[in-house]
Length: 229
Image 1 (cartoon, rainbow, N blue to C red):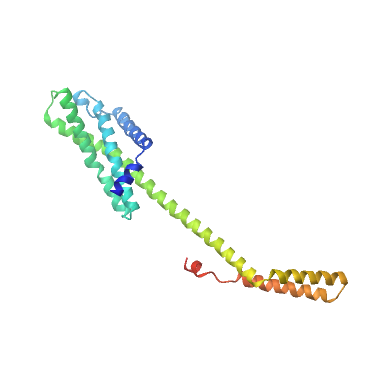
Image 2 (cartoon, rainbow, N blue to C red; image 1 turned 45 degrees about the horizontal axis):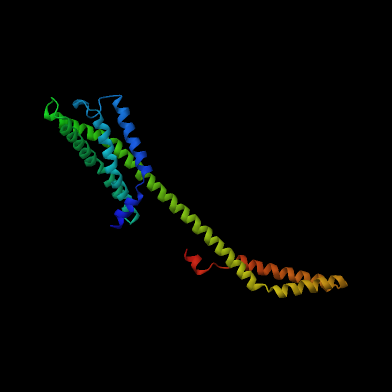
């Protein structure tokens, strides 16, 4: 039930219109090369209606497969089933549309076998384009997931680097007492003002102390959580 609800929410009018436009254009351009489905009964619009129904039936199938992948199903299996399911879907849409037209406009003067031949031929013609659309969708979803994983990995790496910097700064603060540092600088300044020879030695000692603390900070081990990551 949750999968069906998530699939229904993923269906938008924008996506439906774009897919329908793609399907109708394929029928139009194919009609420029050969007779479109329904021509034999005097109603070429059968091809356009059949493609529209095929697209509407296939959209939930593709989205259900994508939802299954989100919930842990194998992408290769789920998406392969979605692509393969386009064959019975388009054959069903083609057969149902022709039967509807025949019931409305009456049976034309043609052999009954022609109905089945056109159903199979027209259904497989439409399946080529419908399956191609599903294949493009599944490949795009796979690429999107790879990009999301890459972005998550980069974000995690940046967070770990920031935590490492914060850890080293905390280590430096623990090793260097600010009060001691300011007292030492004040004493050195006062020594220079008085012209004491020891002021130079005190400055060198302070510099060496800071260098040692800095070296310990740079070489500080990572935290257990960072080491596990």
